[in-house]
Image (cartoon, rainbow, N blue to C red):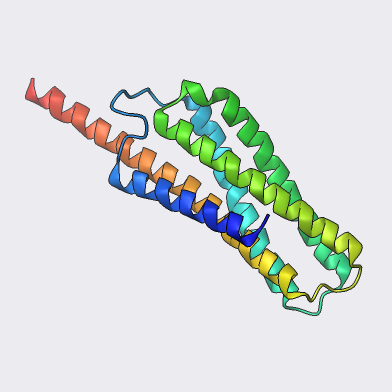
Length: 184
C-alpha cells in the first residue's frame, strides 16, 4: 500500500466521522433498527482495533531502537495476527451488515476497506523484512510503520466513534420514550 492510498483512507475516515458528528443519515430517512449481532461484532472489532493500534505504536518505538531483525519480525507477526482477527470479524460483519442500521452497514464497509489495506501493508512489511535480515533502517520502512500506525488509529477511532454515537442515540431514544410516556 502506498502512502497515497493511506491518505485516501484518511479522507474516507474523515468523511465518516463528519457524518457521525452531524448525525446525517447515510442512506436517507428510512431507518432500520440496530442489530444486536452487529453491535456484538462491532464491540469485538473495537477491542481488536485498540490492541492493533497499541501494537502498531510499539512497532514504531521498536523501529527507533537498536532491535534486531527477529524483534521486528515478532512484532509484525503480532500486528498481522490482529489484522487477521479483524479480517475475520469484518467477514462476519459483511455477512450480517444488511440486518443492522444504515450507520452500522456503512461502518462495516469502511472498516472492510481499511482492514484490507492494513493487511496488504503488513504483508508487504513482512516480505521486506524477510528479504532484509538485518535491522531495518530504511526511511521507506520507517514511513510505512508510521503510516500503518496512523491507519490502525483511524480504524480504532472510527469504531470508538460509532460506539459513542450509538450510545448517545440510544440515550436520546430512551429520553424521547420517557417524555412521550409522561405527556400521555
